[in-house]
Length: 311
Image (cartoon, rainbow, N blue to C red; front, side, top):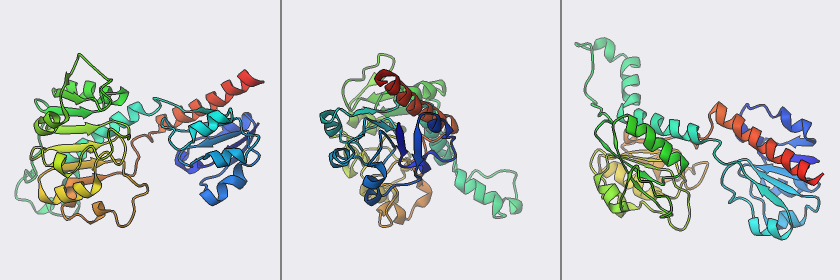
């Protein structure tokens, strides 16, 4: 088999040597759309994370038999085109759940603990000049006794809920699909969740039900001092609305996903005044060392099983 990996840079320093044992493997760190067709023209197997594969690409790659998406979502592949051409498309689900759950709490603690402020306070010499042994100018609250609202109670949402519960939080949730029902926690409307919760975390996919789910009107419903975390998909929260609210209200935002990635230089989030209340990470929640290894193992397993089935 000829295997072409299109965007290996997204794997970081992960070991990709297993692919060489599966076939004639070419590894490209990144692939532009203008380079794609030439690189895959003789491929039997394509491995892509974010590079988009269209029906036209498949049409001009007659040897193509398998597309491995190195992710859970497969929206970067024309699935109808693949089906029409009898090309199998395989993803890897659940590989990063623990990593995303952990990053959810990392973002929360960074924001509510005012980590940036206190680290700078010590390192810029202010603490050395202090008349007392502590600094309580930026108070933080405990999770215990607070209401934590979860938008999207899938595997990741349930994992966050279970840990938040151990901290003593009361868990409310809103199912964007109306399919995830859980008797362990309280299902509420979106409006009730926004109005009543101290912490809100998003773990939903982006679709017609969730696009701009939280716009300016919805964000205005939130309590003063609330924390809103998006670890689902960019586009679920309207970024223009966030840029307004963060300068108007005492609401903290943590975003690991954006509507366009990498972030564009004219994104309004880069120009807010109240920067301490906005924490943005570059879509890293899924990238723990363990998650990336599990992802690669899942992709190679998909290739092996396909080969065994079709040899």
